Length: 246
Image (cartoon, rainbow, N blue to C red; front, side, top):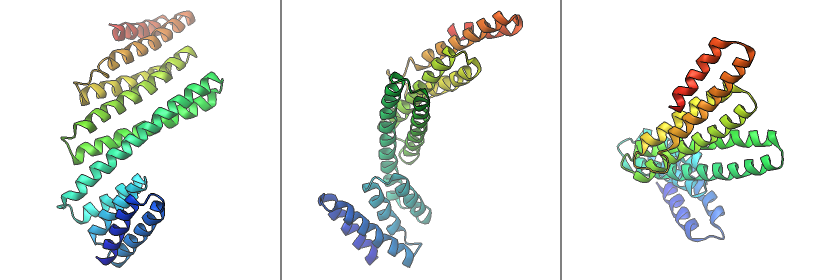
């Protein structure tokens, strides 16, 4: 109890002492980890440790500490509340990173750095997926949080747009099968965005845009197959293009 209290006091001091905040958070973390070493089943130490990690921007570690504490004391409502808050902060941070990566990708494309642009796109998708998972967890812990629902829809929408970038580029390169595969994923993400938050007008056209992109990939595939003389396969691809366009 004493180690945990000391950790909490140091954390509160860190919140107001910007000059020594990092040092104070490190000191708070050490005290809380000592408390856990003394008694690994003392759940208040995990609660405070999770808060300290979150204050330092170390969200995965914060979530891990809080989830462990919640397992020890599932009846304590503070764990669900804090987990909802930390996951929300983590999700927002990941979406911000994804947005910056999209800008970096655009700069890489302008500079003709195709490989770098592809690597950045993969990283942006990874961050956006992480944000989606975080907001899903927020809604598990606090189902009535409308802000988390809006951000979850935004996450699906962002991921859908990242996939659409791939669809367009792959179609332009004549790589129709992977373009169609990415199109399938884009349709799923855009549909999820509208289902999560039906009132969100920003995402309502997403599914239609994804279907048109996939239709274009099918159209390219059908045209290529016609040139090869494989008419049955070409007709199947063009039928799918027509279905998506309709």
